[in-house]
Image (tube, rainbow, N blue to C red; front, side, top):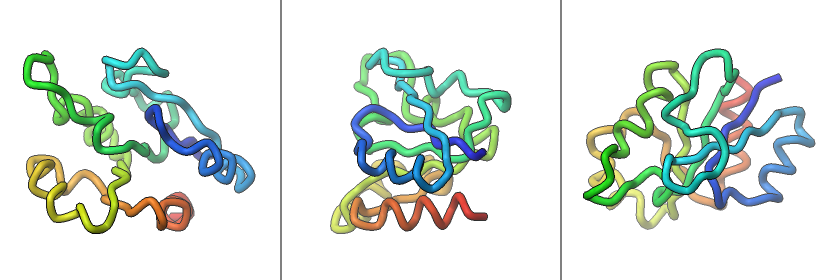
Length: 123
């Protein structure tokens, strides 16, 4: 069974749709919110096939000791795709904000989230 890791705020009906389509879900945290397993500590044994997060959940504030690069590092090193949920009209802004990791994330409009997720998981 493929498992989708998700950060806090991910829509419950979306997660329910994943479960009804035969996928597991696992809550992940960004190290600040105390929600789920800290994403930076993911390992191959966690069995995560995809991570889903809203932009604000992977961004940190300037005085925080780790950056979004650090938060996403384990996903990059393990080859786990990361969907960042962002309205389509904001994609160009987010590409600049995430320019140092943009090749490691997939920007998806909320309207297309389920279809894109199922497409990625079916590979």
